[in-house]
Length: 448
Image (cartoon, rainbow, N blue to C red):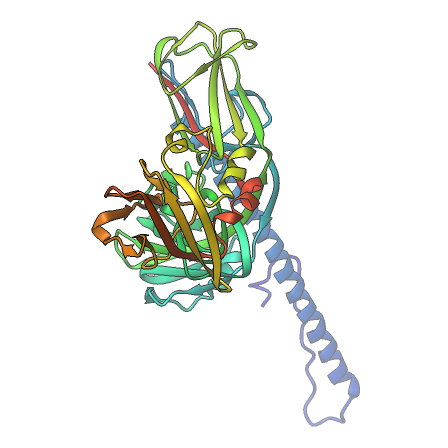
């Protein structure tokens, strides 16, 4: 034992009891005291080893984070011919009322609150593979935690006891071997599901190092959803053997209505350049306006495309959220004289809502003077939409409903009655989601 533990502790020598002599209570007590002291020494040594290990682990983690940041800054550095703002540090930003997330590499309107949620996680029945790990540990956030799914497809079912507002998902994989989020859907009532990937205009999200700007995490910000149930499907597209995850978190983030970001003075590139921005803007609720200045005081609005930069220049991004758009969204149809494309496209004669169940309602809309597609603010449950003229129902070949809920009548009609079933937590809740909406800016580029 003394050879193994060589950190200042020494095991006590045992006391021999002479055979065939009268018993002495001290023989037993002395040995027990020695063994008790030895046990204390062993416990102290284990505690010291744990303390040393934790210090070394934290040092390794800090070194790893510093190395990652060096890699990120070298990958996204600006050059003479190209200015890049990736929001991975504040080196090129002089003033900001926005929230800059240097881990995710994004900018949003000023963050008011952020709540980490605690739903119930379960492995879905569509998963392909097995595991001996507890999927619930993904929410603990312990750095040493590891959940390993042995197989090519993992379906994670997330449930909440009541409808909960969510607008961010963070996944931390253990390595980067071709994992993808191939499906991400949410439901406010368990019957009608929204495709989050479609709202982000992507078919899948790759969980590779570049996907998280070399931060080690994959952060998915999306338009806010009221969620009772969420389905996340992860696939291993390379070897199909395992899907290891360190952690997963869902958060609820609320934002201010406006914010601005102003860069430091830049001297390159100059002249005629191409301006572009990687952004997530949910129209008509939020928007980002871009401006350029030659003196840091007077700014001129620019749009993506060709821009002429002076010898010294500043750029500015302005985030805004429209309260009027949310008021309009609480109506059954978009009807506003401020929007020419819909002001004369149809006339809503009447609308009625009937409760079918605690989670489902039926909408009946009477519409006339139809000259353009009708934007429904609710998403009809598949198989429930019907359109009739008087008592005659239109056939499926006489009307269409696209993925954006634009209803087009393909024949000439005077007045139609549109009926469908939809979630009871439908578009009327859009106004309640207002504080959780923000535009997201991921990159600004000026290239010569």
